[in-house]
Image 1: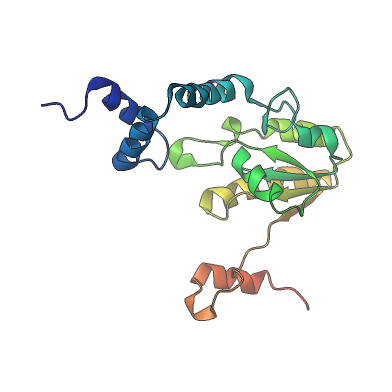
Image 2 (image 1 turned 30 degrees about the vertical axis):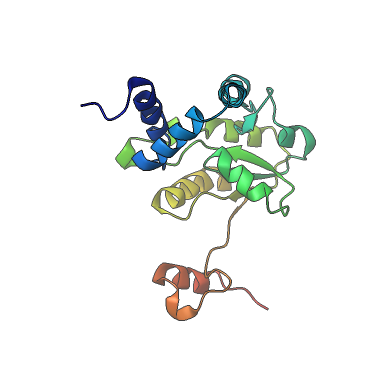
Length: 197
C-alpha cells in the first residue's frame, strides 16, 4: 500500500533533497505547500524559478550577484580582500557591519578526502586580482577546521612572496564561555592568539 499519493510523495522527495531536511520536515513542507492558495503556490514557485534564473556569480569575486558584478565589488575599494569558502560566509560577515573591504569566494576548501584540490577552487582568479596591484591585505576567513586551515595555509604560501600582508581571523574562547567548559582546541588557540591590553 502506498503511504502517499504520487504528487505528495514526489513533493516530499524533492524537499528531502534540501540540506538539513529530513523526512518529517519534508512532509510538513509538502503539506504546507498543498494548503497554500493557488496564488501563494505560484508566488513560491516563481520565487524559486526567479532566483535560479537571475542569481549568478560575480565575475570578480565569485559572490552571488544579479548582474555580472556584485554590489560590493562595484562600491568598495579593493585594497583589502577577505577570502571566504562560500557566498553564505559573505552574508555572515556583512551582517556585522564591521568590514568595509571586498571579498573573494573560493566555492569550497581543499579536501583531498573528497577529491578537491586547489585547481577546483576559485584561487587562480584571486591571484589575478592581486597581480593587478593595489591590494594591501588578504584576510583568510575560511572555517577553523582541517580543510579551512589547509586552504588558508596554501593560499598564504602563494601570496606571502608577493609582499602582501596575509592575516587570519582570530580564534579562541567565545564571549560568555566559562573556561572550564571551553574545548581544549579553542582554549589553546586563545592562548596563542592572546593580545596585549
